[in-house]
Length: 104
Image 1 (spheres, rainbow, N blue to C red):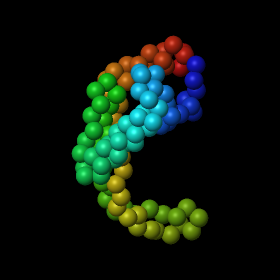
Image 2: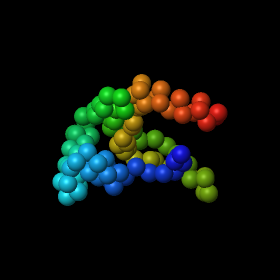
Image 3: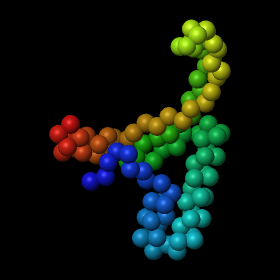
Image 4: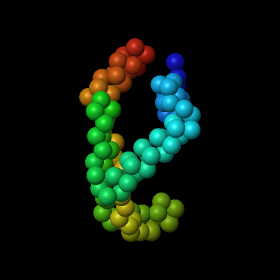
């Protein structure tokens, strides 16, 4: 069984596509197109829903005050945008089953 630190990267997507019969160069192009399309959708504020997996959305964080722990000086943290993932029902169920099987 793989550990939690193992990664599923572009190479993993390429492997899935080539196993389905796609040429390796075509798999690379398809992967790049998918990633570009997802990034472009998030950049304009669209929510990405992948049934069975979950959804991705961009959230804007407002400016807030924090402190530097070394100097205890108060600093303003500028606003920023973050991508947030919400797991879908099927993914949650799969993860719960894995957790139960491992006895966690």
